[in-house]
Length: 301
Image (cartoon, rainbow, N blue to C red; front, side, top):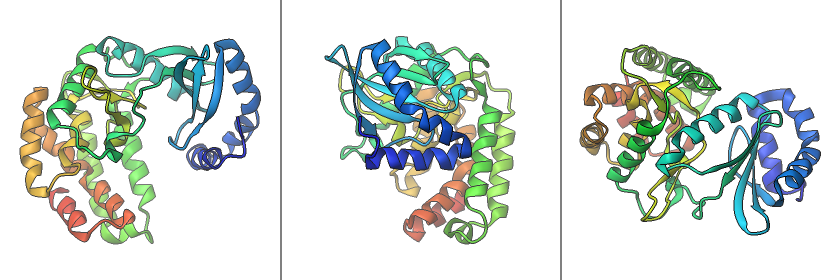
Protein backbone atom coordinates (compact mmCIF):
# COMPACT_ATOMS: atom_id res chain seq x y z
CA UNK A 1 0.00 0.00 0.00
CA UNK A 2 1.29 3.45 -0.92
CA UNK A 3 1.92 5.44 2.28
CA UNK A 4 2.57 8.62 0.31
CA UNK A 5 -0.94 8.85 -1.18
CA UNK A 6 -3.05 11.99 -0.83
CA UNK A 7 -5.81 9.97 0.87
CA UNK A 8 -3.41 8.81 3.57
CA UNK A 9 -2.01 12.30 4.08
CA UNK A 10 -5.53 13.67 4.46
CA UNK A 11 -6.44 10.92 6.93
CA UNK A 12 -3.36 11.63 9.03
CA UNK A 13 -4.30 15.32 9.19
CA UNK A 14 -7.87 14.52 10.26
CA UNK A 15 -6.72 12.08 12.93
CA UNK A 16 -4.18 14.58 14.25
CA UNK A 17 -6.90 17.24 14.47
CA UNK A 18 -9.08 14.83 16.46
CA UNK A 19 -6.57 13.02 18.70
CA UNK A 20 -3.50 15.26 18.82
CA UNK A 21 0.10 14.17 19.40
CA UNK A 22 -0.71 10.56 20.29
CA UNK A 23 -1.46 9.93 16.62
CA UNK A 24 2.19 10.35 15.62
CA UNK A 25 3.73 7.22 17.22
CA UNK A 26 0.63 5.23 16.25
CA UNK A 27 1.02 6.37 12.64
CA UNK A 28 4.70 5.41 12.57
CA UNK A 29 3.75 1.87 13.57
CA UNK A 30 1.02 1.58 10.93
CA UNK A 31 3.06 -0.16 8.19
CA UNK A 32 3.99 -2.94 10.61
CA UNK A 33 0.45 -3.18 12.00
CA UNK A 34 -1.08 -3.36 8.53
CA UNK A 35 1.42 -5.98 7.44
CA UNK A 36 0.72 -8.15 10.47
CA UNK A 37 -3.06 -7.89 10.04
CA UNK A 38 -2.83 -8.60 6.31
CA UNK A 39 -0.92 -11.81 7.00
CA UNK A 40 -3.14 -12.95 9.88
CA UNK A 41 -6.44 -12.15 8.15
CA UNK A 42 -5.36 -13.10 4.60
CA UNK A 43 -5.83 -9.61 3.16
CA UNK A 44 -4.67 -7.83 0.04
CA UNK A 45 -4.63 -4.11 0.85
CA UNK A 46 -5.77 -1.84 -1.99
CA UNK A 47 -5.67 1.72 -0.72
CA UNK A 48 -6.99 4.22 1.79
CA UNK A 49 -10.47 5.71 1.59
CA UNK A 50 -10.54 9.50 2.00
CA UNK A 51 -13.18 9.37 4.73
CA UNK A 52 -13.45 9.38 8.50
CA UNK A 53 -12.26 11.60 11.32
CA UNK A 54 -11.49 8.86 13.84
CA UNK A 55 -9.99 5.99 11.82
CA UNK A 56 -7.93 4.99 8.82
CA UNK A 57 -10.21 3.19 6.36
CA UNK A 58 -8.59 0.80 3.87
CA UNK A 59 -10.19 -1.03 0.95
CA UNK A 60 -8.99 -4.61 0.74
CA UNK A 61 -9.92 -8.13 -0.30
CA UNK A 62 -9.88 -11.30 1.75
CA UNK A 63 -8.64 -14.54 0.29
CA UNK A 64 -8.30 -12.70 -2.99
CA UNK A 65 -12.06 -12.68 -3.56
CA UNK A 66 -14.21 -11.11 -0.82
CA UNK A 67 -14.19 -7.32 -0.77
CA UNK A 68 -13.69 -5.90 2.70
CA UNK A 69 -13.08 -2.71 4.64
CA UNK A 70 -10.31 -2.53 7.24
CA UNK A 71 -10.58 0.20 9.88
CA UNK A 72 -7.85 1.16 12.34
CA UNK A 73 -7.95 3.85 15.01
CA UNK A 74 -5.62 5.08 17.75
CA UNK A 75 -8.62 5.11 20.10
CA UNK A 76 -9.36 1.48 20.93
CA UNK A 77 -12.51 2.50 22.80
CA UNK A 78 -14.09 3.79 19.59
CA UNK A 79 -13.47 0.58 17.67
CA UNK A 80 -14.59 -1.54 20.62
CA UNK A 81 -17.92 0.26 20.80
CA UNK A 82 -18.37 -0.02 17.03
CA UNK A 83 -17.66 -3.76 17.06
CA UNK A 84 -20.12 -4.30 19.92
CA UNK A 85 -22.90 -2.30 18.26
CA UNK A 86 -22.46 -3.77 14.78
CA UNK A 87 -22.60 -7.28 16.21
CA UNK A 88 -25.72 -6.37 18.19
CA UNK A 89 -27.39 -5.13 14.99
CA UNK A 90 -26.12 -7.97 12.77
CA UNK A 91 -29.46 -9.78 12.62
CA UNK A 92 -31.11 -6.70 11.10
CA UNK A 93 -28.95 -6.90 7.96
CA UNK A 94 -28.77 -3.10 8.10
CA UNK A 95 -25.09 -2.83 9.04
CA UNK A 96 -21.90 -4.31 7.58
CA UNK A 97 -20.98 -7.77 8.85
CA UNK A 98 -18.08 -7.89 11.32
CA UNK A 99 -15.54 -10.42 10.07
CA UNK A 100 -12.67 -9.76 12.48
CA UNK A 101 -11.93 -7.56 15.49
CA UNK A 102 -8.54 -6.92 17.11
CA UNK A 103 -8.96 -4.88 20.28
CA UNK A 104 -5.24 -4.46 20.95
CA UNK A 105 -4.56 -2.94 17.52
CA UNK A 106 -7.82 -0.99 17.33
CA UNK A 107 -8.67 -2.85 14.11
CA UNK A 108 -11.96 -3.95 12.61
CA UNK A 109 -12.49 -5.94 9.40
CA UNK A 110 -15.92 -5.40 7.87
CA UNK A 111 -17.96 -6.53 4.92
CA UNK A 112 -17.67 -4.01 2.07
CA UNK A 113 -21.04 -2.64 0.99
CA UNK A 114 -21.17 -2.62 -2.86
CA UNK A 115 -22.27 1.01 -3.02
CA UNK A 116 -19.68 3.20 -1.29
CA UNK A 117 -21.39 6.49 -2.11
CA UNK A 118 -23.33 7.67 0.96
CA UNK A 119 -26.85 9.01 0.79
CA UNK A 120 -25.43 12.51 1.35
CA UNK A 121 -23.72 12.32 -2.06
CA UNK A 122 -26.20 10.15 -3.96
CA UNK A 123 -28.09 11.52 -6.94
CA UNK A 124 -31.40 10.01 -5.83
CA UNK A 125 -32.99 10.84 -2.50
CA UNK A 126 -33.81 7.99 -0.13
CA UNK A 127 -37.51 7.98 0.83
CA UNK A 128 -38.18 8.95 4.44
CA UNK A 129 -40.02 5.66 4.97
CA UNK A 130 -36.81 3.79 4.10
CA UNK A 131 -34.90 5.75 6.73
CA UNK A 132 -37.65 5.00 9.24
CA UNK A 133 -37.29 1.28 8.43
CA UNK A 134 -33.53 1.50 8.95
CA UNK A 135 -33.82 3.23 12.32
CA UNK A 136 -36.54 0.83 13.47
CA UNK A 137 -34.43 -2.17 12.46
CA UNK A 138 -31.47 -0.93 14.48
CA UNK A 139 -33.45 0.00 17.56
CA UNK A 140 -35.39 -3.27 17.60
CA UNK A 141 -32.33 -5.57 17.36
CA UNK A 142 -29.65 -3.73 19.33
CA UNK A 143 -29.11 -4.25 23.06
CA UNK A 144 -29.18 -0.95 24.99
CA UNK A 145 -26.31 -1.92 27.29
CA UNK A 146 -23.94 0.71 28.58
CA UNK A 147 -20.52 -0.91 28.45
CA UNK A 148 -18.10 -2.27 25.86
CA UNK A 149 -17.54 1.35 24.87
CA UNK A 150 -21.26 2.16 24.62
CA UNK A 151 -21.91 5.34 26.60
CA UNK A 152 -25.10 6.97 27.90
CA UNK A 153 -26.72 9.39 25.46
CA UNK A 154 -25.96 12.22 27.89
CA UNK A 155 -22.24 11.62 27.37
CA UNK A 156 -22.60 11.57 23.59
CA UNK A 157 -24.64 14.80 23.67
CA UNK A 158 -22.02 16.48 25.86
CA UNK A 159 -19.34 15.65 23.29
CA UNK A 160 -21.43 16.98 20.38
CA UNK A 161 -22.42 20.27 21.98
CA UNK A 162 -18.98 20.98 23.41
CA UNK A 163 -17.35 20.26 20.07
CA UNK A 164 -19.92 22.45 18.30
CA UNK A 165 -19.34 25.40 20.63
CA UNK A 166 -15.56 25.02 20.40
CA UNK A 167 -15.64 24.78 16.60
CA UNK A 168 -17.62 28.00 16.30
CA UNK A 169 -15.58 30.11 18.69
CA UNK A 170 -15.49 33.91 18.17
CA UNK A 171 -13.94 34.95 14.88
CA UNK A 172 -15.31 32.08 12.80
CA UNK A 173 -18.05 32.39 10.17
CA UNK A 174 -20.30 30.20 12.31
CA UNK A 175 -19.88 32.44 15.36
CA UNK A 176 -20.64 35.53 13.28
CA UNK A 177 -23.95 33.99 12.16
CA UNK A 178 -24.91 32.33 15.44
CA UNK A 179 -24.11 34.00 18.78
CA UNK A 180 -22.53 31.72 21.37
CA UNK A 181 -25.53 32.28 23.63
CA UNK A 182 -27.81 30.58 21.10
CA UNK A 183 -25.47 27.59 20.92
CA UNK A 184 -25.40 27.37 24.71
CA UNK A 185 -29.20 27.47 24.98
CA UNK A 186 -29.42 24.65 22.46
CA UNK A 187 -26.83 22.71 24.44
CA UNK A 188 -28.89 23.06 27.62
CA UNK A 189 -32.01 21.80 25.87
CA UNK A 190 -30.08 18.83 24.45
CA UNK A 191 -28.74 17.99 27.91
CA UNK A 192 -32.24 18.12 29.40
CA UNK A 193 -33.60 15.82 26.68
CA UNK A 194 -30.72 13.36 27.10
CA UNK A 195 -31.41 13.20 30.82
CA UNK A 196 -35.06 12.31 30.21
CA UNK A 197 -36.74 9.09 31.26
CA UNK A 198 -37.46 7.63 27.81
CA UNK A 199 -36.88 3.84 27.63
CA UNK A 200 -33.33 3.51 26.26
CA UNK A 201 -32.39 1.92 22.96
CA UNK A 202 -28.97 1.16 21.50
CA UNK A 203 -28.55 4.22 19.28
CA UNK A 204 -26.33 4.66 16.25
CA UNK A 205 -25.33 8.04 17.64
CA UNK A 206 -24.24 9.62 14.34
CA UNK A 207 -26.97 8.59 11.91
CA UNK A 208 -26.57 11.41 9.41
CA UNK A 209 -26.72 11.09 5.59
CA UNK A 210 -22.96 10.69 5.31
CA UNK A 211 -23.17 7.50 7.37
CA UNK A 212 -25.93 5.75 5.42
CA UNK A 213 -25.30 3.77 2.23
CA UNK A 214 -27.92 2.61 -0.28
CA UNK A 215 -27.95 -1.17 0.18
CA UNK A 216 -30.16 -2.09 -2.76
CA UNK A 217 -33.81 -3.10 -3.02
CA UNK A 218 -33.42 -6.39 -1.16
CA UNK A 219 -31.36 -5.16 1.76
CA UNK A 220 -32.38 -1.54 2.13
CA UNK A 221 -30.28 1.31 3.47
CA UNK A 222 -27.20 0.34 5.49
CA UNK A 223 -25.78 2.29 8.44
CA UNK A 224 -22.02 2.66 8.88
CA UNK A 225 -19.61 4.34 11.33
CA UNK A 226 -21.76 4.33 14.49
CA UNK A 227 -20.92 6.21 17.67
CA UNK A 228 -23.01 3.92 19.87
CA UNK A 229 -24.85 5.23 22.89
CA UNK A 230 -27.89 4.22 24.92
CA UNK A 231 -30.85 6.54 25.19
CA UNK A 232 -33.87 8.22 23.58
CA UNK A 233 -34.77 6.68 20.19
CA UNK A 234 -35.83 10.06 18.78
CA UNK A 235 -32.19 11.19 18.83
CA UNK A 236 -31.23 9.08 15.79
CA UNK A 237 -33.90 10.75 13.63
CA UNK A 238 -32.89 14.42 13.97
CA UNK A 239 -30.85 14.82 10.78
CA UNK A 240 -33.58 13.21 8.66
CA UNK A 241 -36.23 15.72 9.71
CA UNK A 242 -34.10 18.64 8.50
CA UNK A 243 -31.96 17.22 5.68
CA UNK A 244 -32.61 18.29 2.07
CA UNK A 245 -36.09 19.55 2.82
CA UNK A 246 -37.65 23.00 2.64
CA UNK A 247 -38.16 24.49 6.11
CA UNK A 248 -41.92 24.51 5.62
CA UNK A 249 -41.75 20.70 5.23
CA UNK A 250 -39.84 20.07 8.46
CA UNK A 251 -42.93 19.76 10.72
CA UNK A 252 -44.56 17.25 8.35
CA UNK A 253 -41.35 15.20 8.15
CA UNK A 254 -41.15 15.27 11.93
CA UNK A 255 -44.71 13.96 12.22
CA UNK A 256 -44.08 11.24 9.61
CA UNK A 257 -40.88 10.01 11.22
CA UNK A 258 -42.27 10.16 14.74
CA UNK A 259 -45.30 8.10 13.72
CA UNK A 260 -43.16 5.52 11.91
CA UNK A 261 -40.73 5.21 14.83
CA UNK A 262 -43.46 5.40 17.47
CA UNK A 263 -41.78 8.24 19.32
CA UNK A 264 -43.33 11.44 20.62
CA UNK A 265 -43.33 14.00 17.80
CA UNK A 266 -43.01 16.95 20.18
CA UNK A 267 -39.93 15.36 21.70
CA UNK A 268 -38.41 14.72 18.26
CA UNK A 269 -39.05 18.35 17.34
CA UNK A 270 -37.35 19.46 20.58
CA UNK A 271 -34.28 17.44 19.61
CA UNK A 272 -34.25 19.19 16.23
CA UNK A 273 -34.51 22.57 17.95
CA UNK A 274 -31.71 21.68 20.36
CA UNK A 275 -29.23 21.08 17.55
CA UNK A 276 -30.54 23.73 15.14
CA UNK A 277 -28.08 26.36 16.37
CA UNK A 278 -25.05 24.13 15.76
CA UNK A 279 -26.46 23.10 12.38
CA UNK A 280 -26.98 26.78 11.50
CA UNK A 281 -23.39 27.61 12.45
CA UNK A 282 -22.16 24.65 10.37
CA UNK A 283 -24.23 25.89 7.41
CA UNK A 284 -22.80 29.40 7.73
CA UNK A 285 -19.26 28.04 7.84
CA UNK A 286 -19.90 26.03 4.65
CA UNK A 287 -21.20 29.15 2.93
CA UNK A 288 -24.76 27.86 2.59
CA UNK A 289 -27.45 30.38 1.59
CA UNK A 290 -28.40 32.77 4.42
CA UNK A 291 -32.00 31.58 4.15
CA UNK A 292 -31.01 28.13 5.38
CA UNK A 293 -29.15 29.59 8.35
CA UNK A 294 -32.11 31.82 9.21
CA UNK A 295 -34.58 28.92 8.96
CA UNK A 296 -32.54 26.83 11.38
CA UNK A 297 -32.17 29.74 13.79
CA UNK A 298 -35.93 30.24 13.66
CA UNK A 299 -36.48 26.88 15.40
CA UNK A 300 -33.46 27.10 17.73
CA UNK A 301 -34.04 28.08 21.38
